[in-house]
Amino acid sequence: MSSVDLVVVGSGFAGSILARLVALSGRQVLLLERDTHPRFALGESSTPLAALCLERLAGRHGQEDLAALASYGRWRQALPALRCGLKRGFTFYRQRPDVSFSSSDSESRLLVAASPDDEVADCHWMRADVDKALVDRAIDAGVHFKDRAEVIGIDRRASLMAVDVQTPKGRETIGARFVVDGTGGGPLAQVLGAGRGPSLPFSSHLIYAHLDGVAEFQAAAALPDGPYPDDQAAVHHLLDEGWIYALRFDSGRLSAGLLLENAPTSTSPEDTWRATLSRYPTLSAAFARARPYGPGFRAAGPLQRRRQYAAGPGWALLPHSYAFFDPFFSTGLAWSLLGVERLADALCGPERETALGRYAALLADEADQQAALIAAAYSARRDMALFRPLTFLYFACVSYAEMRLRLGLVPNDNAAAWRGFLGAGQPPWPSVFAEARTRIEHARDAADAASFKKWVQAVIDPYNLIGLGEDPSHLYGVHLDRLRASHARLGLSPAELKARLPRLRGGQP
Ligand SMILES: Cc1cc2nc3c(=O)[nH]c(=O)nc-3n(C[C@H](O)[C@H](O)[C@H](O)COP(=O)(O)OP(=O)(O)OC[C@H]3O[C@@H](n4cnc5c(N)ncnc54)[C@H](O)[C@@H]3O)c2cc1C
Image (cartoon, rainbow, N blue to C red):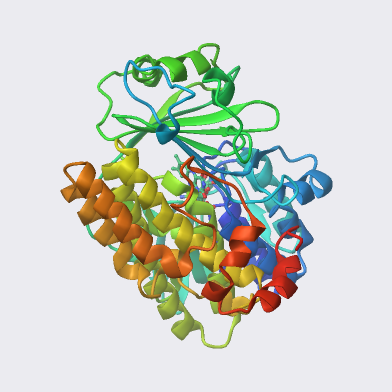
């Protein structure tokens, strides 16, 4: 049996980047993929914390292509062959059955910008292009890559993990000193001993497609201009049945997904999609000329899964293999990249076992945070008076973490990767999302919603750098004056903050 230092199973972006980083440290790495690239994949909308992680990885390992993925301007300049879309922020609309979306209904619209301009904005990733390019870069770095190679079993033999692989030529077994499961969920984790995690408080089913010919919702509803064009964002349509995401690429193609709380009863995903949309007049009008691309509408679900352990002797799971709940708030790319950064540290560093123990403990806390936030979002989504403050908890938590890193108030070195995602391990955040969910579930009327909002404003006050909850139009741009007014929250004098402002991506004093 031939053997290598590391086998990474699955060449999504996370598996490929990890394989590359470990190969760059001089180890023998084999990357196995059951499919062939380019191939379709979901998980397209990036965030500022993902960008920070990419920039750290690029700087530490001298891999400039990763920094180019981190902002729209750099991407367009350095990686023009890879398709992407401009993501200026998070757009939310509460859609009501049989009611047209009205331009005067500002209570049903919420925009939160994540960037001050297009140049430094986040991107939607056309995963077919990105994942293929990342495999190519992994090969350049010395990774041995095999596609059409499905791992069908793994067992421990003395000091090696024996990885059984099915290829078109037959079966083979490869020895590995360490195995990383980057399959994005599936049976391998169970074989490795990851066990089953705690049961989850909600479930959702997905209908999804890439579509051409979808009108921009801002135009369809004749909405006045906000801090950025509404559609150049991760657009969330909150429905009675669940919610829809809409991510627009520069070509105009739209990645759209309908998340349903209850399993669809129709056998055809397209019928379910059309029947659901038909209840929402303005949404239906925007999608009237939609033409599904490629295989058309597909279905998946229930989506929720969670393992008990993220690492064990000789193996580790990447975050998306460990747990997934729902695409609400686009947490997956950032979490996966943090997992890559931590695992690269653990596998290449001197204290592997200690680092892997820490890795597993962090992932468990971070999964709890995401489950609580997303369960709360499902409970709140029919009432903007509850949903809006809930989003403020999320935005305050992530924007405070981002701003402290960008401004150099905490070192943006590899220790940054080991700080908990979504406030995991950092009071008050570990209890906040779970408490929000309880409060939302007990809210009965406008007075309860007002008291929830008041509680949220008190929780976020020390972290609220961007004036969340203070704009009656619910349209939040990136305003340096708001940030300047928050200097004390960052522990800085006005002059100290002013001196650091140029460190923001493109943000000038
Ligand atoms: C509907 C949906 C929408 C999402 N939207 C977002 C979003 O907007 N933003 C965001 O940040 N995150 C999002 N996510 C999460 C995101 O998809 C994941 O974080 C991301 O894809 C994880 O990447 P990965 O490389 O770990 O795994 P994947 O992208 O899942 O790649 C796994 C790879 O492993 C291969 N594989 C599987 N089994 C085997 C095997 N046995 N042997 C060999 N190869 C195998 C597969 O073919 C695949 O290529 C979304 C997820 C879903 C389900």
